[in-house]
Every structure is written in C-alpha cells, then in structure tokens.
Length: 82
Image (tube, rainbow, N blue to C red; front, side, top):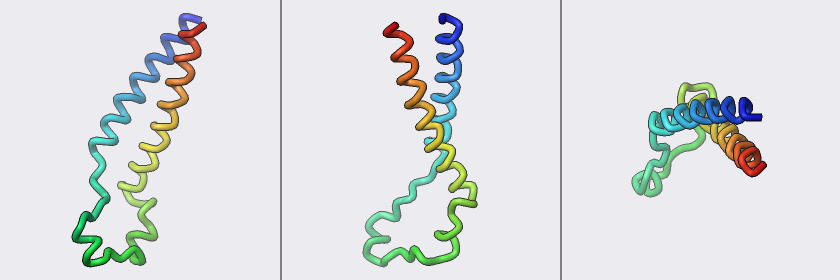
C-alpha cells in the first residue's frame, strides 16, 4: 500500500506543477468595462471555433487537470485515513 501512496504523490506533484504552469500561461478572457460598454460580438468566426485554437486546447487541458487534481486529492485523503 505504501508503493501506491508514493506513486499517487508523484503523479499529484506532476499534476500540480502542470496545473500551475497552465494557469499562469493563460490569458485573461475578460474584456472588462470597455467590452460591456461597446458590446463585444460573440457571433464571429473566432468565437465559434475557439475550442480548436491553442487557447481552447489549453483551457480544456486545464479543466481536465483540475478534475484529475480533485480526484487525486480525494484518493490521497482516503489512503492516508486508512
């Protein structure tokens, strides 16, 4: 059981580092007050195909890593209670 703990801790650390790197590399999507006043158009080609861009892939990878992070947190918590 100790080997499983060490493997999960190693994977957990890799996920944590990757998550920090991905979050810090992402750009801010919010257009701020100027976008609210002017009215940002959400019906253009870029908005429809945003998931295919590098930013879209990075956002998807961040969400997947967050889910893996949460699952690993629960798994490690359960293993350390036993």
